[in-house]
Amino acid sequence: MQQKRIFVFILLFSVCAAGYAQQQAQFTHNPFNNMGINPGLAGLRDAICVTGLARQQWVGFRDEEGNRLNPETYSLNADAPISLIRGGVALGFYQDELGPETGVGVSLSYSYHLEMGLGKLGLGLQVGFLDKRIDFGSLNPLESGDPALTGGEENTIFTDFAIGGFYMLDDEIWAGLSVTQLRQASGGLGESGYGLQRHVYATAGYNFALPTNASYVLSPSMLLKTDFSSAQIDINTRVTYNNRFWGGVTYRPQDAVAVMFGVSLDQISIGYSYDITMSPLGRMGRSYGTHEIMLQYCFDLGLDRIQEIQRNIRFL
Image 1 (tube, helix red, strand yellow):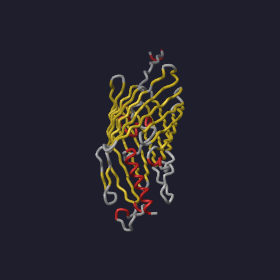
Image 2 (spheres, helix red, strand yellow; image 1 turned 90 degrees about the horizontal axis):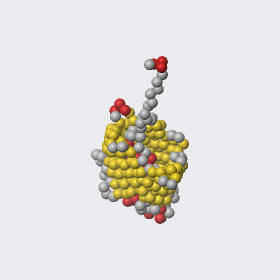
Image 3 (cartoon, helix red, strand yellow; image 1 turned 30 degrees about the horizontal axis):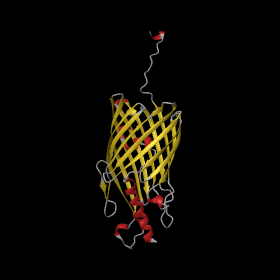
């Protein structure tokens, strides 16, 4: 029984490493989560935006004793433009649970805005704090007294940085490049310690109305991510009808195919996605897929609108 439980944990961490090669959690709603991976976007939309994501990955993945092991991730990011500092700021919160490992983080970002061609470029810097905890007491060693798997919960707080650039051309074209966990902070967790790995994200997307019917807007996009040991790409295609209803698909090679749909009501957007697991976990019947919910609120400040001068004879 103990050997089976240890095998399940080894399988979990092996699939995480091979499946999408990252310490940082992934999301299917990538076009809505650019603020979570690129500080250059802060304030670039000329709106106060708050985006929340909740992800239940590999639902049904349990150990031999029935304990739930599937990753759970929650993210909340808020950003706003501030003209006095010629840019924008953002605040982010993050929680990720992976078996006996839990990470809780907070980040603060600043982006400096530059007019470039017909669009705008944001150059961002982020400082983040991550509280990483591992409950060694929840693991059953193959041999009693194993020093690597004894004791209770241990935690370390990491301080690290991220940089990024994000370019937007109105609401038509966008592209970004960012590097997170830049200094690769390390600390003591267990006997071998724990270190953060540097991640690179490259993303781009394009929104265009169909020539035959402008009520439909097609939005292809991609996200490439790597930790320099392996890489993965997400390919997304989304169709929006009448600026309100949308649906699409995401393909993540060797990991998942996802379907998504949502609705936009004035300044609020709500989305849901379901990932069909294609990795070994899915083929072995240990995963029933992944559920993700997205909620976004954007209050348009109208900073790019030309203010009309109202004349009144009382003030002539």
